[in-house]
Image (tube, rainbow, N blue to C red; front, top):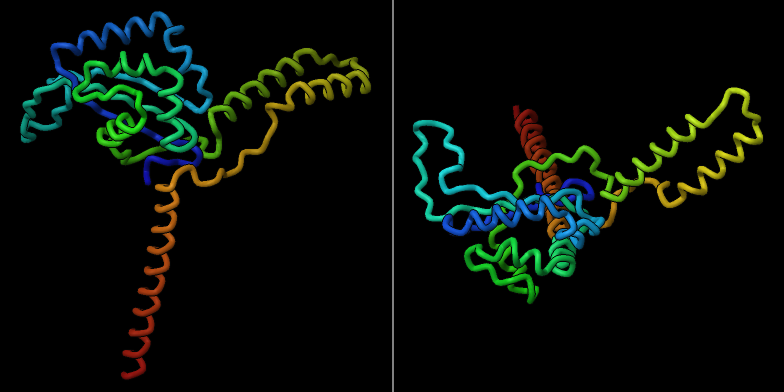
Length: 234
């Protein structure tokens, strides 16, 4: 599925909200932006690359051409989009456990929002309102958010190590500092490899792709055999 690119998953959820209460959500978002501590539980989730909530007014959807019929919407909409590592269930459950009150505050005025606890109704709500990602580009498909943080830590440490080097430094002293550098970076040094399947949906996509490729090869072989028989008859 196009939601998955390497180790990352892209989520887009759009939920209706009454335009009369949409301004309350905007106020809540403004407060959360000014006081990041209100989202401390969310920030500590290392599996998240990015997460954002946006209010779209009922008259703010794109109108691309004069021939396109104008929509008459009854609601404004709240768009939530995020990139994360791991499975869909792991991500949604982590959100619930990290900031249950925050989720209920953000989605409180959305139509038919069931609250984040219990989990099953919340799962159904997100699945029902999730939109498939048509195209998802990931510059570093084999890197998790922790891999990116580790790479930055290694780069910063190497730059600092180079700045502290001197032309007249002895080989023994250089080796001692270098070994100390490696010991300090042990938790940040690691190879990036493909992970096991992050969800059953990804497994089904791979399975369907293998079936499609096999069927296509059989079809090509049958066509070639038929053409060969026609040429032989001639």
